[in-house]
Amino acid sequence: MSNEALALRGPVHGTRDARRVAIGSSVGAVIETYDFIGFGTAAALYFSKAFFPNADPVTATLSSFAALGVGFAARPLGGFIGGHLGDRLGRKPVLVASLIVMGLATFAIGLLPTYAQVGLLAPSLLVAVRIIQGIAFGAEWGGAILMAYEHAPWKSKGKFTGIVQSGFPVGLLLANLTFLASVGLGDQWAWRVPFLASIVLVAVGLVIRSKVPESPVFEDVKDAGALTKAPIVDVVKNDWRNILRGIGLRIAETAGYAVSITYMISYLNSAKLADKTQTLVALCIASAIGIFATAAWARLTDKIGRRPVYLWSCTFAVLFGVPMFLLVNTGLFFFVIATIVISYAVCQNSLAGVQGAWFPELFRANTRSSGASLAYQISAMVSGFTPFITTILFVALGWLGPALLFSVYGAIGLWAAIATRETWGKRERKAAEEASAATPHPVSA
Figure 1: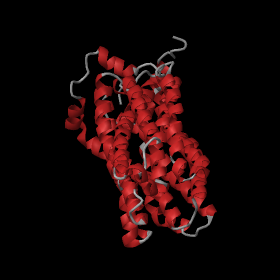
Figure 2 (figure 1 turned 135 degrees about the horizontal axis):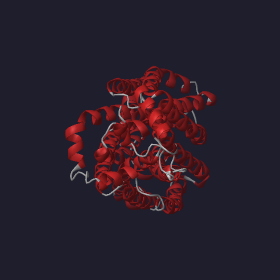
Figure 3 (figure 1 turned 30 degrees about the vertical axis):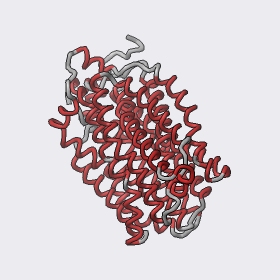
Figure 4 (figure 1 turned 90 degrees about the vertical axis):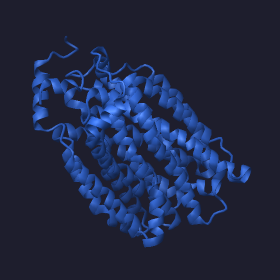
């Protein structure tokens, strides 16, 4: 690997703003995850009664999860828009715009009327706002991760993108803590308060994100006149194989999460294996551990490469599907906590920790935002409707259906990891080490 190829990843030692950019990108990830994942918790615990009360319990749950899935289905459109604008106008404008749209949409959910108040208009409004959420969330990730990646030192891409990826479990923790605190407010306000409270986080995030500088890699591409007029078309034409591989890699993580966390919340509740408070406590513990687990997995990729972590984690996921449900079926709270922690900290966090550095490295600098965003967000269509599919599988096969589906998703990720090239192997790490030793540090320059 030549230094020229590595140079497409930004300055050798990173920029002076690398840490500030990573934290700023992470703050946005916290907020947008709070907003987007909070919907999943509300869908599992409250929305079936609030928006679909006339259906039988299974149908109401399916309807609630279908509304959840619509947002995921909209994320590729957000990835398309955000990716295009990120390659044409820069990474930073996408960061700010996506945060504003997501924040307003989430606040609006807290104001929505219920079915009891306006009838069929209520679920229609819920779906419409959820689509807006999906577009905003789809646009957000590419800009956030590329800003951190392209400001980071060559030898620490995993570490700095891991800071951004750690924002997702922080958002999950904040969302679940808020839902836990609001349980006693009754079914009407228990789901409204968390969405209304998100406006405070959005205001803080906008202040932080507005101060981060643009990506040095984008500025270099722009100054060199290498911007492409149609980055989406270009990346699909030239890098469609990497997009497909990225989709497979992502399915193991995001669709696996949809089974082991989003659906599991509903399963524990409906099967009376844990009440709402216990479920939320287990999620809070898992997400708190996940903050540090994601960062640790990401830093590990700087030492041993991106691919090995993915291979081992997906293999574990394939084997863990059935034991995961056997453990929670005991009804013992300790095993419920242990299962959710393992599902999240190992099966999800490890893969998310790798993606922050691996996905950008699969694409050229002038189409990186489009390629990484498409690979990352198209898979969301699978994960978005997974709770819906899992509920149907449970009706047909009992808990074994969801368990096998989780293992299938792990197998898809394993296949994709085998098929995807290593971008930070021994050769790349050696070249980066030599370039780092030969290049003056910016502080002393």
